[in-house]
Length: 494
Image 1: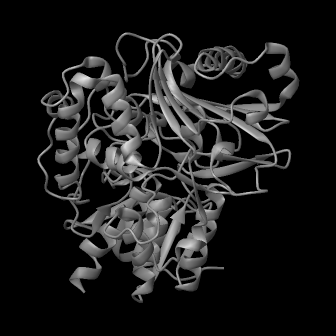
Image 2: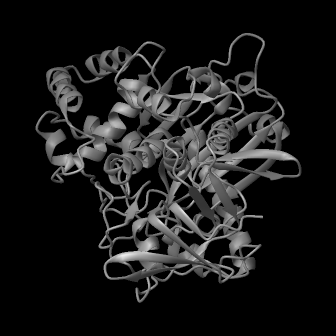
């Protein structure tokens, strides 16, 4: 049992950023403890089991992939700073992915981990935009997206200086927003650059066994460096005095002190823990074992994301290639004249979304996932999901599962309904309510606060933020956020 009551650094949350910060600090001899309210690490990127079957959540693909020998990229920096060998993640590249727009995907852009494939697609489908697209890429390549003091600028405004066709504009924004935007309809250009590089200039990959490989590697690095973690032991309150965080009150009432505190749980979520601070609505009971023990409420904090997501997961008794779904790894789709990335008026907006088929990575000869997996993500409004009774909630999941599946199937090769029904082994679905319960994120807002705090500073001199609300996105971005904040605020100051 952990008995220490004082640490050099206390970290709130065992997501990817918290784990990375902990590893980096422990490497340099700091006494570190990570406090995690839930019983699993990984935060937004984790896995769960039902009837012995493991489901990944969060991870569609690990972005920022580059091949061995490519230097100066987020992935290579991450591996070096955490002392991880490339082979430990055992990343397998995507086959190909698509952006498909129109009622049945009539206009599509194919892309791979070779950027020239996308460039060629743009030139072929939007010849009048070729020069502007190249100018946009040059600006993306040269933009300082890791600056901690950058002045926010509208991504839409900057992209429109180069791209005049609204269809191409929306097609470029769709993947970038679905994989990282906490803002509606537009995003800060630095965030756009981070995601554009991660998706298109670098690429997609995945460990054969999914996100648990990444988690396993991080946990082993943290343990071997001497870091401590306390699971099912959240922080209930941050005590402050004279401009400093002086103590953490844990869920069990115990008090812990630390010279430095890093919070990876989100900006408004951290603010809610501060002594005397107002707890925004939407905080979920820490010890609830089922979703209906305490229903979350919509958060009213001004810097809380408004939109969330649903995801349907279908397990098949065959490989997706066996029914004609073997080409694309990820498909970003939209059926409407304009792409509307915003909190839906209805429970779910099935007009756009993301299809992920994890089987369609290049796992190598004679190696394939044991079952087929078909995942679909769509935008969701947290308010109605939070308000439902348990019976209404189950019925809504049934109804929206069918609608999400029907929408997504327009963008993959047709399969006879009877053939697909016979291939389905089981299904599952998560909603904003699930996300809020298992992550503690207000509103089930996966990408956190619309206004990011790039330098991680708070009003308290020894309390810092890392993770989604610091502003580095994706799995690699989250880990880099933890590393950067640990370096910037603690290690560089001795």
